[in-house]
Image (cartoon, rainbow, N blue to C red; front, side):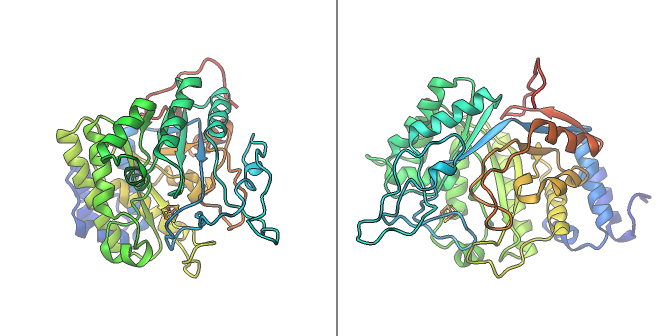
Length: 406
Ligand code: SF4
């Protein structure tokens, strides 16, 4: 019998974890509901230590959100702006390094338009941001945006080609599954998912982020993001990517309308899919990123959102359930740097990166888009927690540096 568990409650699950037996759906629900949180954290930590020792991964990256116009209105989202001839350049000046190119144009009317924070970036602006990131030492740009009703498929191809032509070594991780499906609809002639991915890859796309998964459940889908592509479409995109040899990540947006059972079911579906990719496809998921719902500014702002303990439990249960995922990430933008640091003892081995700018969520609602940790700050978080910081590239290869990054 284990001496590690604080109470006998989780002894049987501890035995399963130590003997590398797969946990069931029921086991996952029990782990979420346990009061023995110390054992839960320690079990997740043991798995993390077995896989990665004390190594903790981060990268030097730059997130770019090319537009916040979106044809959908997901209830949990505070990022989207409807497309209705509002001034389009007003937010550009707030994007680092971007001078406003267009003046703020009053909407066709007679009265001046209200100030708007809707925006879209031109391909040139995005390429300039990527160039700046590369000169600051970034190895990756992470590019996602809303579902813009007017931008043609060529815009996304040009964006990848433009970055690749000036920064050939910069890895382009871009476009969630929902954006890829949007491209199949706006392309002329219409492309299949596979064709979209092949053309983007030929233009320079390196891998896919994991966003847009939300919760794989019809009830939650219908209540919170009814018009968005559901799990079938999300998996179709990642299946096609893995078949083409393109790696991707997976996410779960938790802490809104879903139950604990629906969270665990989401994890089981991802684990089953990863089994298939590992067995028969040319690529697989590299990393799982649980995204903590931030209610501020969304239609679901009356909900409290997850607290710190829920964040830690979700990360730990994810580590234990997803036994075929190499990495579990705490995205510090959503968890906060302080909680992400604690999470290193709860199954997490990756902290994302320097990020720099992030439009999609801002803590405290009206917080700034400039959300950056320097390399020194990331390394300090890791070292103070007793771990070893390792700079990685987008595919988790070690990045050797001859000089210290700040
Ligand atoms: S979550 Fe994505 S698809 Fe949904 S409204 Fe926001 S930007 Fe649009």
